[in-house]
Image (cartoon, rainbow, N blue to C red; front, top):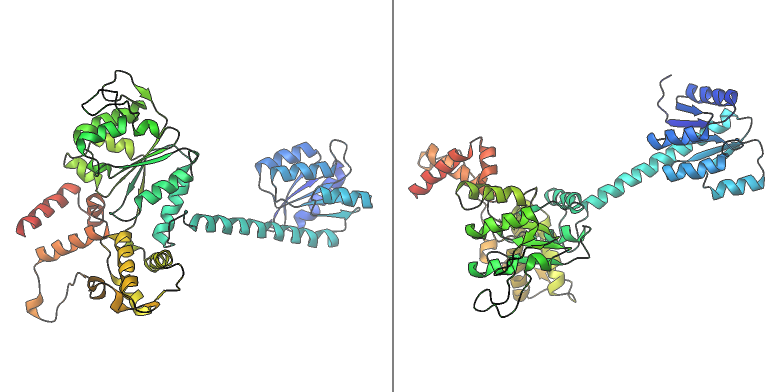
Length: 453
């Protein structure tokens, strides 16, 4: 008979009794591993996932109750059925304290043991399924302060959990307003560095002549306004995370110094001859396609490899489906916590249809405006901005009823390339893959089409 009912370990230091019980269970369809040595049984249990353990209580090397305790240390959910010739109250109490699943008297009656094994294995299966479901729920649960449960965002949450435990450098790519800093903070909070500082700098917001001092620090007197020594953000973030937002905007001449700092894990403040070590995790973000920036000589390829050990791609809001309504509802609760404001179905459809080029920030602005204009606790289509209310989705049309509506192949290709780029947040490298082109061919086509405009 094929062994399909479960994996069972049988332990009894009486060889004949052990063999007889193992054979009986095997005949009932169980896969049986039998041992006369409790230590050998425990060693097997440490290597193989087991559905149930059946053990005699009275054994010279180790009694069954101690075996039960140690077995549950190895596989905490494994049920243990004890076999005893002395079914006394004392034995029952000891078995309960050891968290044994059940015990049966000797000589073993298979009509008694078999249904108890079946229930024990069913319980083991249920516990495994609960563990699996809990893992799925955990992986689908958004990190704190992040709203959305679309498939594309669940993939982001799973990536956050996977990368948080390492110190690898991470590049978060996404359009402006997609929440790159929120994801960076979630990675920090889920990491072993959570107790350390999280420091963010927007490389596009700091003047080029100041960003070097901000990052690496400066010695007193290093330049005209340097009246005091400053450590710099790499050192201030020691033991924590430094978030380099919009790193694609960093001046090319500063990228070499950043690369060296990341390679050596040391920084040299402006005006100083001393290098200072740092212990800081680097998370970068960009709304640019940095691979394209490398080709166009605006970003160093070696720096890209250094910051892009792990990449997290944030989907644009238009690709997140029902998350749009969930985020809008969250914004409503923040804006009017004492009012039960809802969104009319027709207004919800308009929100879902709009393409949100400004992503979550634009949606927040839209909802704030709607609340300010609304005369009731139900947001209607009339409360939405004109561009949302009157939006008509763009589609690439390849047929027409009227010959005057037909377009050239070049125009069709131009529109399709534009549509693919839009759906991929402007990522030319990924667009080239989707279109079946190498990147240089795609760039030539874009140059040609832009020249016709």
